[in-house]
Picture 1 (cartoon, rainbow, N blue to C red):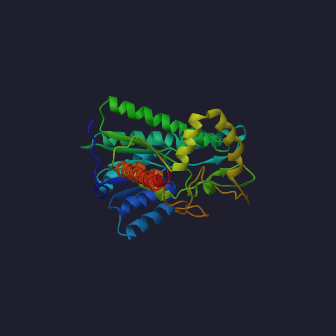
Picture 2 (picture 1 turned 90 degrees about the horizontal axis):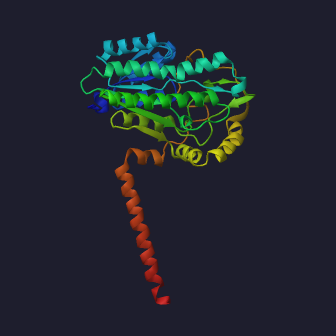
Picture 3 (picture 1 turned 90 degrees about the vertical axis):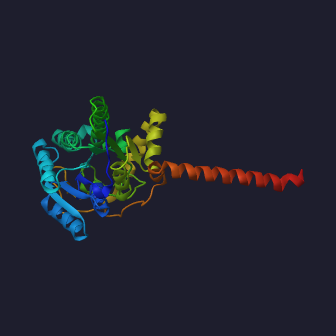
Length: 340
């Protein structure tokens, strides 16, 4: 399998969930770096807004109204990419929805709708992407957006966590099958920490208060940087945000303890004192394209994520720190020598 990942300014990139949060940041970031982007979402008004903003800034973009949970509509995305730009080099499955509430009280139709978008949307998008990329010289890249909740679950977002576990399992299995079949498709799983997107404001909510993403929260651009890095580098899987990586590590090292910690803390930190607003995007898209949550973007930088993208630089910084620490120890020893 030989995959040739082009520079961004030579790529056509499909982004689902492109009118909000991570998808919007990825689409705009790709266009700013010269890529042509195919925007996918459920609402024409929001897509038109984002498309006009990108084109107005000098970028190249086209848009397709599509529900990722419908395989027929996903094929229309492929057709539009071929019509507008001759195809695509990278496909990003980012579209997702959420539901806050206890699993036992979650209506079955809402649970199914969540999986239709979060899991089946990834399945439909991945299969369509692979069928196209395997025919292109040099192949291309498939990037699926999971979550740190692909690695551990939390209360109130149980169905969401289950869907992200499913995304991880599907992505890992697909990667192995494509490798075995020698298909020229690079498959990457991106797992963001808590991100300052409108996710909690768009989610269906069965609690008494307005929900929020559990802190610490990073800006969506931090995830977009990781996605665009994966579009040009062979990345198997990456967790975005050092805080999330620590949570994953803790859940893996001390599962019983973290069951207690998350079970006690997460219902509290995922709710605000504000009364809930009965508006969501579970069954229908939102008409506005919006990048950030109402409270702001979140942390604009993650040292951990930067180090993952630049391992040589990170190793150099660690080396410099080690040299500096050694020098201080030696200097300290010299200063103390006359006192012996």
